[in-house]
Structures are given as C-alpha cells and as structure tokens.
Length: 493
Image (tube, rainbow, N blue to C red; front, side, top):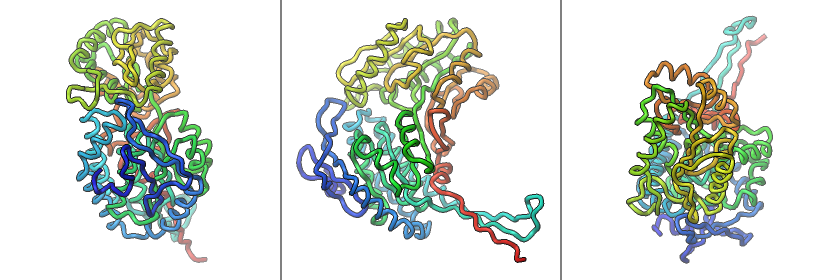
C-alpha cells in the first residue's frame, strides 16, 4: 500500500480498513466488519468497518460543530483545497485505477477514465463556484409595492450533507457530491457503497490530505440495511445527495421527510431509430451505450425501438460489429475491450433470470445469454415487448433488447408510459426531425445521434418520474448544495 494510505488500514493481507470519523481513522467499537470481494475472481480484497449508530451520532455532532467555521472560511481558501484535492487524485491515478479495477471490475480504460474525470470535475467545480454570487432585488419591481424595500439575497450552505454514492462510480460519484457540497460551505457525511467502500475511503484520504478541516468530512461504512435507514432519517442531516436504484431512492425519500434531495436514480434509456438514421453510426452507439462497464450504468441503453424494416437493417450490423468490438473477459487483461464481470454473482443471477423470463415470454436470444460466475455474456434479444422484464425493470447488465413498433407514435407512448425517465436517444439524419421528436419524450435528457451519457459534466443532468429529483451538472450541483437566504430591508415608516 502507498504510504499516503498507510493509516487507513492495518498491515494484514487482505487488510482491514478503518473508517474516518471526521478527525481520525479508527476501528469501529462495534467490532463488526464486512468483506469486500472482487467481482473478477471473488477474492477478498479487504474488510471494512460496520460503524455503530453511536459513531454516526458522534460524526454528525462533529460535522455540525465545525460547519459554520468551514462556511466562514474565505471562498478562495476552499477553492485552493479543492484544486489541491484534484492534484492529489492525479498524483495517485495509477494506484486508484488499479484499485477500481480490482474492486468493481472495470476495465483499465474505464477505471482510468473515472479517476481522470474526477480530478477534472473537482477542478471545474472549484473554478465555477467563484462565479456564484448573491444578488439584490428592489420591491418596486412588483406591482403595488412602493420603492424603498430591498432584498439582499445570499446563497448559503444547508449545513450537513449526507452523500450516498453507488458501486458503479464510487470515486467519481462520490467526488461529484463532495466537491460542490464542501465548496458551498457544508460539512459532509459520505456513505460509500459497500462494494466500492475501499475506493471511497481512499478518496476521503485525498480530500483530507488536501486540507479539509477536522470534523468537516466523515466517511462511514456499512451496509444499507445496517446504517442506511439510520443515516437517512437522522435529525442531523440537512440535505441528501444520492445516486442509486429507484427503489432505494424512493425508500430514502420517504425516510428523509422534508429534507432537500438531489437524486439520480435508475433509467431504461431507450433508443429510437428513425427510418432515415445512419445505421452504422447507430449500431456503434448502441454497442457503446449498451455494453460499457458491462451495462452497469444508470445511462446504459436497455432497449431499442424501431419499425420492422428499420430493425431488419440495424440488427445484423449490431451483431456483426459485436464480433470485433465486444469481448467478455478478465478486465485486467489488455485484450478485454468492453465487458468484464457484473458487480457480483448475485447480480449476475438476477440478470440471467430476467433474460430467462423474457425468453419464456417469447423473446429470442440472437447472441449471448450465458453466465459464468459473475460474468454475463453480452446479450442481444429480439421479439421483445415492453411488458417483459428486460424492458419493464432496470436490468443492470450487458443486455440490449430490440422492440419492433408500427409507428413513431407508438414509440413515444412506450417511452412516456415507462416509470423511468432518465435519458433517451434518437437517431436520424434530420436533426430538425430529431428535435421535434425529442420534445415529445418525458425524460430528463434526449441525445440526438449519440448514446445516453452523463457528461459533459457542466451540462444539466436530471431524471424525471422514478429516475431522479433535482438537477446536477457543475453549476447546478453547486446551487443544489446551497439555498437562498433573502434579508429584506424595509422602508422606514
């Protein structure tokens, strides 16, 4: 282990990792730990603490005690801390890349891309926050009010933000919450995913080394069933930022009560192929959007809609391209192009079951469909209907389903009836037609001639229906991690 990270674990192999209580790396008094297994070969990478409720209370108390001091710290100093954090991330890019590959099964390119993106995003947050300012309003702008009243409107921190990150981007989607929350003057309690905890703890160490003060950032580990409900209902939490599946998001929202929320949840991210689309481009984007990180992305493509004639042209191109562009195997191997394991064998069994149920309902497997341990073969299904499990629920794996439709109006109806509404893609050579079609879709974002994706990170990113609450993206996240505070000066007399 690098000397930078020596204090976060013991010297045993596999190590037992400590948690960060806001001031020190400590072992939980409860004495309970959870093993983290690599999805690549099921080897034990280490153990993480299962913190107690009392330890959460102590971290929350410290976060509140230090938050006002942190908010009062000049913005330029908070900006320097974030830039230094980005520098530390770049300094340990190779180390963190190797860790991500082993812990969550990403390929080398995917893991390195996540680390680089997190550093760049942290820098961008630090630059953008300097343009966020308060403003002033005069009362006579509204009918019936005389001149003289003035509102001084500041943007201030909420207090303590609970940040809950997912397994598929444990570094990037922790950093995308930590950086804006801290820059706006909040303290943060980070709850990393169990599978991804080791990466999250290392990221915490880099924020700490960059100068985040004692008490302002704590990272608590343990399963959602063990500490999740206690955290989300905790009276010390002032705002919650969460990325994860829709069912968990709804449970958190119910548990949290009237706290401000910023959620990115699940999505089915359909592709609509218009008859005039560039079929070769469409096939490449479907493969990229459906099979990157074994389909374990909230923005991953789950199904493709097209008329019979259109799909008859498209599907053979997809199958042919898969022969050279998609390979399943150990993500540590330089020969693996896109598809490694899913996060666990349990997840793989769930995906296999969804495929089996859809086939029993009439779907046909054109390629793939097999499973070995945590590995699912890249799978193409046809003759799929919208009510089948592979479309109706979020199957978080390398499965793309083709659904034949009679008209584009039918496509709009299928998409808008879905409980999900994260992204959709429309492929057409006529951008004007694509825009008109996109405006009929009840989703957060629509991509024209490209697969669904979260970035660029300064674009607004959001979900509707069961796919999210609030708007993310660099400036939007900074604003979401703070609130307006009007101070009204009334005219005397």
